[in-house]
Image (cartoon, helix red, strand yellow):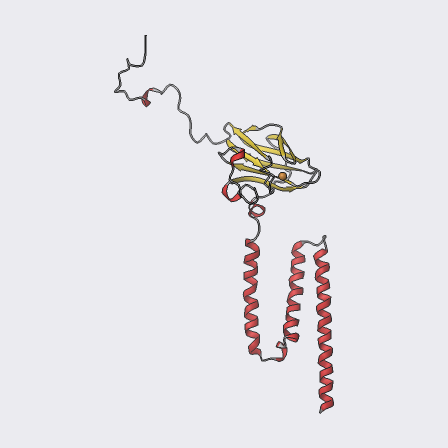
Length: 258
Ligand SMILES: [Cu+2]
């Protein structure tokens, strides 16, 4: 009787060591997967989630003795895990920065229309021209800095370049408070990007919105003139029809002097 329990104990202790070894190997695998730069992040995440699920299951079953307990106790654990999945998904989806999801980064396309050269420096934006005709415009952006990322954000606004709403803490333009037309984010030093965008007539401000860059001078007024397809929203009245604005009751002789 007693020898049997000893055997059983030895058996279970071996089991625990095996489980421990599996957990250690999986943890090592997770670290390796995390550092593999070549692996696409979708595959990385899938592998890491799989490893995590197996590890959690092993810990629950063996070290928390769920395997030897009544099935009743498994229910609250199962419920918790089922709830955790949608909650994690919702949090990770809402945590993403809006600009990377909402605005497609312009790729180098066949340049149609006007081409404007933009040089980005720390901390200055220099354009080959600061106005253009309405229609497709390609901005050829070169980050001339040798040690710093810069970005290129086109904002449609009536405000002058130095009067955009900013966050007091970071000095960044409040992106949620302005109308962003297009953006190229995180242009590496000594790299270039093309942003092609169809701009309607109006006033735009172009900025780099990395923390502090806008305030240090990476902002430019940009005016688009003329009509492409749509007429201006408020067509000016011809100068000839000036008379109706003045009340006809007044005597016309009052104004002209001989
Ligand atoms: Cu910048």
